[in-house]
View 1 (cartoon, rainbow, N blue to C red):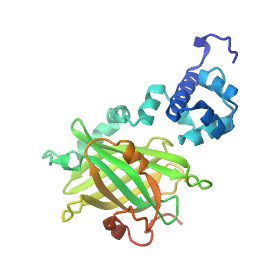
View 2 (view 1 turned 30 degrees about the vertical axis):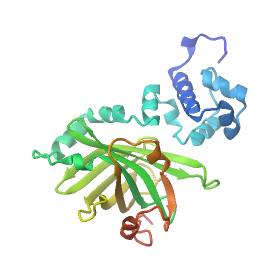
View 3 (view 1 turned 180 degrees about the horizontal axis):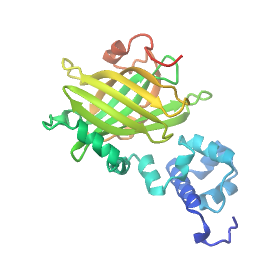
View 4 (view 1 turned 180 degrees about the vertical axis):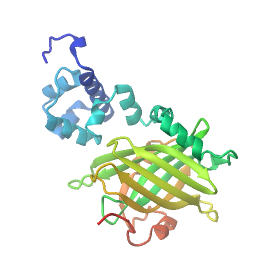
Length: 280
């Protein structure tokens, strides 16, 4: 597309890509740094930012991998993209709640005598053995919050590059519903970056421990075998009230099994060897 074409000649797909790319670059703080990292000429990259030129499919994948998002997400509507990137998941959850199928599900599982669910609201460290990195424990940032009559949750996982462990290669973001029922906490959620996986969890509080641990089991089933189905033990360790902040996001990591930052109670519950259930 020529640089002299009018603005309204740009397709919605191009405009979304350019706006989303500008947002991601602004969060990095330096166009030059991004260009060096992805290996794209600054002059050419500026054309991508303006929306007048689209990268090749190969460069789009390079850009998506650098920012840790799915390729299709780069073309999402800008307001939705901003909500996901900046951690404002309420809009996405409200859209989900309005779906007729979800409304019927909520009517089924909501009990008449509501228990005091406020005790579960807040930020947690979530621990489990990784289904991607063998014999490593995944620490993700998990948050339960009230949204109208229901509890919702979201959590974020970060995975390092195989080639450079200090670099984040993938970021997965899950959004879902939390149901405290009969002294247990049930979670169901979906992954919004790859849009590929549903996960389910059931947790029970460790009442004897004032540090507020919840132990349970989680399972994940993807739409394709890109990520194999799994089931494993998981632990939630309460941090504080409120929504996730930068400190929680920066603490997400894949850890050595004996990492000293993992609480003793969590290590004892997860065990000395992965008990991951995966298809052969």
